[in-house]
Length: 186
Image (tube, rainbow, N blue to C red; front, side, top):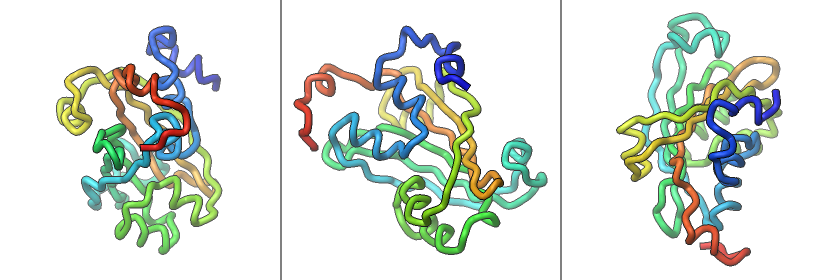
């Protein structure tokens, strides 16, 4: 599906380049943020718990009540401390290799980097992009404004392994980011 068709309801003309790139990327979001904002990004793990599949069971192709891991993180600029993205991931742990399960539990390595280290092929299937507001997530992102959200399923070896939802502020680009000299990494 065409990216423009996918986010038409968001008002593509009203989105700036950074917002369009972040909504459309199917690469590693952490690397994309570092390239856009010229700042190293770290993962702040906010939570990791075991839950039972419910309304997400059909998207992940598991039975209702199937155990899932729920991981909540914040992607934060190392130099500025600026929160860029809040993400929640539902993982079908039974479909992940033990080494990936261990890394998820014991490291703050971004998911995209973990999949790359595992040399595990994967595909992202975009499900939804929308404008939304959540007071708790907005507080994590240090904003009181509207948020952009995207949600997608990651499939590996023919089976869904995770469902990822990511939120970021509508007001990403400030004059400071636009005027930062190229190649300056904070």
